[in-house]
Image 1 (cartoon, rainbow, N blue to C red):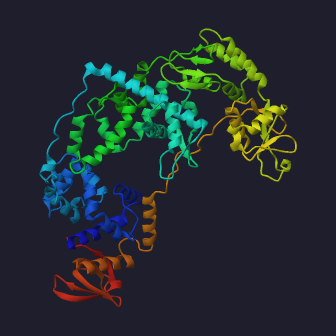
Image 2: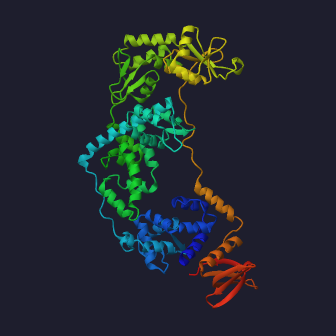
Image 3: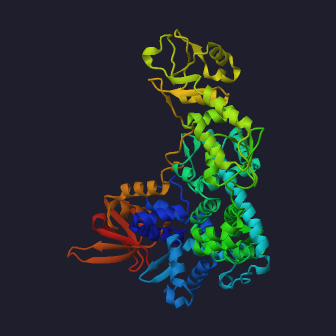
Length: 616
């Protein structure tokens, strides 16, 4: 207890002088919780708690542990980094220092006692001894076979293409209808099923696709709903290889620095069992922790075709070595060739013989609904899909012209007839805003539906599919709803009614379905920065190491732990005298302590004490 308390005194003094940024980084890395921390002594004791120390050591790589072990073996000496004779000793010791496990005084390194105790216990736990930490890596990197590269690239490209198109479908689905986020996290089950169906993937694959899309900044969480971001609109129009490059580049950018370094070093090496063996060697006390983290990121790498069958693909190697632009160049020839024309069928279906160019696909989706998505995608034109296009500002002429540019064999007569009929019927129902002055029935109404066709209005009113709108007739013969015009409009459109939106002048206006997330997932306050600010507030009136509260707390710790410490005292002539004492009590503004050098009891005024430290 005594040695640990002395370490806590030294660490507390160091923490107090640390920069805010350095202190916050330490708190995040060591995953320190705010509970029970009232000052820097409490923080130091928490960092030197045996469980906390063991967790921190388990997350250090072998070179850093070897440097720590070398310092431990030189105790009670305090060696410099150069005296250890290890490669990169200065860097690895700096890493351990940033983790609050080792300290440096004028270039000399020493371990906190809690760290020494933890390392001494490792052999009994089946962990390496101090000597074993210096052992070399088990095997060299196993290179990728060039003869299998074509097979790997084909499998990787298939996976990458499927994931990219599935994410495009997911974005289109949340644009049409946002997905609800549960309070405990994750997309609600009904929405997950809808997204899985839209993307043609298994239900369990939806969270992974959501994560990839969010990481790339294509969907965001706003008001508890997942929505496309502004960036998603441009992404949806890009060639598929460029779409993939953004997803893969975001995967690389968001990798934690340690994992990015590990995978970057294996751009041309296998990721299988040999990699796992290397991880076990590199993190001898925390192989499972690192392996779990690596698996999380390599699973996404598999979905994106960065790796296939534990082998980096050619685009994957390019990504790790040179970035997203180089990866896109490598992936482009591996993807299926995009087409610019399709087959328009008499049954109102549209079949694309290959992946349709994204800009054409996006335009076609405004007037047709996707039925199946693969290398040969099929769409279907319906009165509702054409009404949606007309509501967005299309005309019969613009729709026909677009179909003519797409058609490989001309426009079938049934399709031409449906376009003309839909344009004629468009606007037979009108939806607009109810002003407060117009609402004379004593009920809250936000929108109205009007039509010269009274029979059509009666049909709408009794349509069970529209019951949720709560439609009521008003004195002027219109139907009113408590919902906004956009909600009412799209409900009528989905029910295949010839509806248009209008303004207060009865002029038809275009509506766009869906909205975008104005921000990505909201970030919670940084707990580390909050704790740093609180600690600074508590100690702002005690600068340096001479504050009264700071000195009192140091003496209190020494008394409770029966520590021997040094105290610097200002004497009458203004000079400073240092005593090595064991404090026994503080009362009446005076410290009583046993002087271990002179073997006498001293009584020292607290006002004269300028510093408390630990003896060498």
